[in-house]
Image: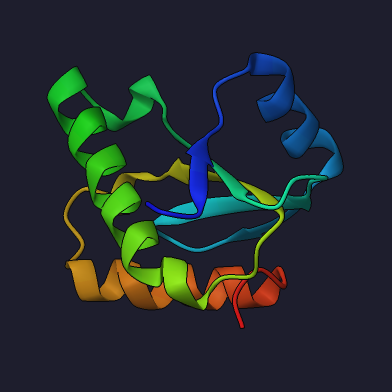
Length: 111
């Protein structure tokens, strides 16, 4: 991911959850907020409710790949957190791609 760095501080996640805008689909929830940097910062989370570590890691990898494919269409200067939901485990990658694009457009991150 060329224009994206990892979001890994707990206070950054909390700030997005409380002050960011959110949009939800059956496969994921997306939180977004402007930052003061020239790059996007991405965080992907998966709750233990999804299942064992193998399932959670697979869901995170699939969502990161979907974001990577959409990255050229995204505006710069946003913090984005993607929360995996249960249906993201078995959904086809095309459906994840469509849902993420529509959610990011609703939040004003995608062009």
